[in-house]
Length: 229
Image 1 (cartoon, rainbow, N blue to C red):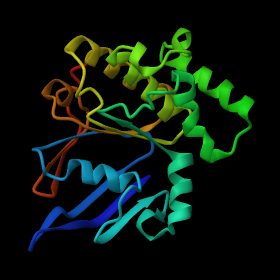
Image 2: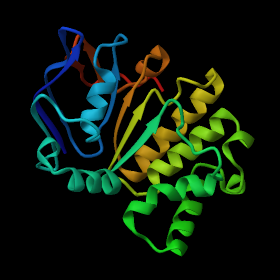
Image 3: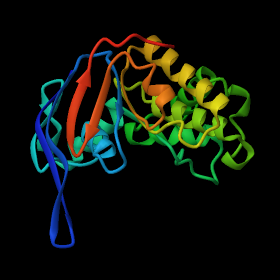
């Protein structure tokens, strides 16, 4: 379970202090699915970074299963990210010189698994996103949708508890977007993930059973929306 209490994040911009997050309170149960919308600069990506332990709040607490991520030493926080949290980004962030198989295996390196175990788990993850036969291809030999599937496999190969996605369909056409969202929804259900996604796409926010709007660093929630998917 996530529990955020009074989370603020301030940045310096020249002589001004900008509040990216302003007293955010949020509770997410295990297995929840939350979609976050809002204007550019409203704090969406900052909130996702807090949930993922990629940044620390100026004040407030970000608890995951009772542990305040903001209070952890960096080495332990890195371990939590490596074992518990998967990330999917708009830009895929694949290493261009590595094959799909090798890109997925990179997520397992911090876990210090044997090479054979890394290969086996990466192959299983690629098969789960429909790319088992493309494991030997480098990113330039894959379509945008296939590259995002590799990125999703890389996030899931760790067998995380949490999946965080920042505009995961932002670089994709409409048909590919729908394919990727269907895949993410299926994986969320099958793996019992806590799934949080940031998006600007109204077609995706309309599907949300639980929707958050972040504007000027302040969060409002709409619960129990009808799922249009």
